Length: 219
Image (cartoon, rainbow, N blue to C red; front, side, top):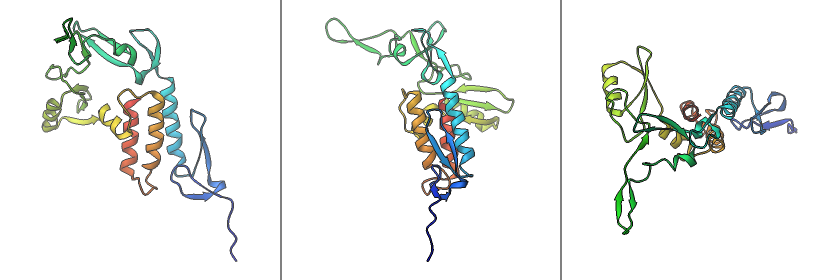
């Protein structure tokens, strides 16, 4: 009669059951230890390094002067051309970022004067665009941010070598909101990267790469 091998355990990455001597423990920056098979270990260590870098990348808010993770700051261009970086709280206080109307003394809606706007000036046509720009790399090594029309024109000319994923798309892939915190981005990445692993029924190599690209775009 066969005897069950009790020295086997599941890999936290792909879910496969492997012998204990083939499992390696990888510790994440938050202290969580995950058990990985030889195939998943390199991916887990790379993810740990990425998450660690997210912890160390900090910058100052130009509004309150407090230090925040770089991913939590957003650039705003004032109408005089000045660029400031703001945390979520200060960003809400920047004039001109409302819906464009406010109530007057008699209760009617009056238009406000816009004195600031999100940083979405196309480097090609120099027009202000109401959506997130595309970060495009051309054959001569230049990286520029441009609107959809300008990007498509350059693509038709065959001078585009790479188009970086937009943050809006990255947030959709990870399932996080625009104001997601460092911790929320990290947790979403860990959840999505496990289900996207090629060795799982729910995953594939392309899905795994897509999740990594989305995380890289948001940090």
